[in-house]
Image (cartoon, rainbow, N blue to C red):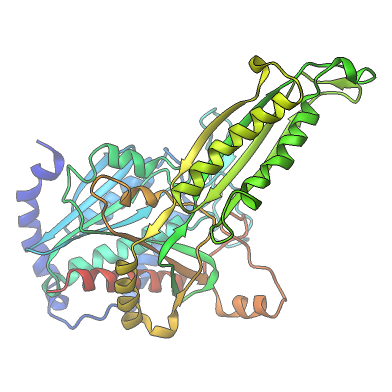
Length: 444
């Protein structure tokens, strides 16, 4: 019998115990925006631990174990090792809808340079065994802390809501593997199937205490493309005896720009960036090959498909125009694909209303979509087509935000070694936001 089913009876007993432990809060009025001092101190200590102990994608063994302990300690039925180090905590609380709330857990191979007293000093290893510094440079530690804060508050307020809450600690978001792996291992089959999926992500450009939402497409399709270009090498003094792959690569780079400027509607958005070009070893040698690495970004599936097929068409056509035989045409390969994240408009409106009521309408911003990517996109792209929303959580102090607007400093971006959320207002708002949404969706 699966772990979740095996513990359902045990969970009922734990729920009774939990009810006595939290009796003083169960029947109190719902105050989604308030986190008392003792509770904040608990969550801050958790955040500091997570920040100082990051783990790389697919290596989140200790992180996932800590999240599992936190959920179990307040009465959730917890299953570990779902899709790698994924964690699923379930709390059933009578008849009602099912809400899934997700937080990602992995860190990045970045050496922290924030000069904070609690800065990460952790060294990890890549898949190839190479040593590398590790940092929560995308603030997944904030995401996890907000999830645990939600777990604790919903357990404490069981008398004020009904339905089922599914909390997910997801591994390997940074390498676009965790969400898909958890779904493939039965996230929506082995556990209660959600009616809605919710997630948040810190923003390096939004003030702490505020949140931001985008209705519709919120984050982009992202594809990595490699073009292996072949040529006929030779002496740099006799170019007429060669087929120069550097010249071919240059023509391909220029021609690729037409995919956006001439094949994509001005009303749509797309990016084709050649981030790397390599060929040759010496001044006077024409190489046999060149290699291009591209990142491609879009929102709609139609634009994405046209650009990806267009890259191959252009690469092969340019090689043909230079007289290369077909067996020497470029090889185009695609990898690290992430689909666009689509925020269900109706659900976005409901989340906006819940957040506005909890933290104030002035603190809820409507934002434009971005060309970043999130594998939370997979949660709404299954056969169940579950409505989903991810929203932004401000992480910049009031002072730094004001200085940035005056042009006195540039705010570090996500993935920067200098990025550090203003922890107290960010944690408080993250917990309040998650709780407000959960209480709205699971209200009696």
